[in-house]
Image (cartoon, rainbow, N blue to C red; front, side, top):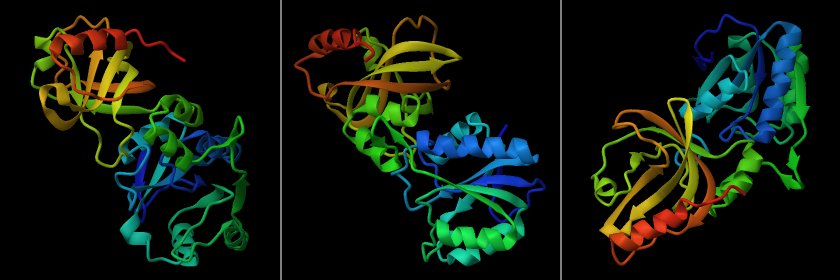
Length: 293
């Protein structure tokens, strides 16, 4: 179970700490977390990771803060050291490092080779000097390639913005997903024989390409094939953004207030306006025949 520790608040455990932003918890990030897990087991420390709870990237994160913590917990982290950007952005690297190591019993640090820290953007060379002076072990992990593609948050975001969720899945190590609580809709889907569930996009997550996707939706531990409209509903003159999902095979009652997770597997088509509800229903029925790549 992940324990969140706000930077500056006490933690009574010795830490093996992965430092970085970890907004996507992609394959490159996961190599760092695996090394932390190994070091913590060897040294009897708690596996820990730092990330930002608030940041200038709000609205541009692959995953928001809450989802990030879930993923970090799934990767075996026990402590999430949560930084608040506005409190640390003015600190120089040495000042930040001194505060970190004065506040916490850090035995190991793991980072990527392109890691920088502090307002003066200290690099891993400087971090090595500071760690040696404090007797802290530093492991610098090489950047990670997958099938010739450099794994990075930038690459993942590029794929998501173009709708290439299959390529994003390969770099993330799992399908891109959005978790949310089912909200009330206008009932239009029920009236045309295509009942849907609606969730909102977390405000601190990026927007992917708008369109219709082949998805899987997790509900109460069970996975349902589904089709998701990510964007407006122009056929009904609805310009408001929504994430609207039709679950295949679900025969239960209302899901209002239930938590679901929508996993994006294939981009099917752009959102477009149909002549009438009949044409829309026919198209959705074809969408539901989507195949995994």
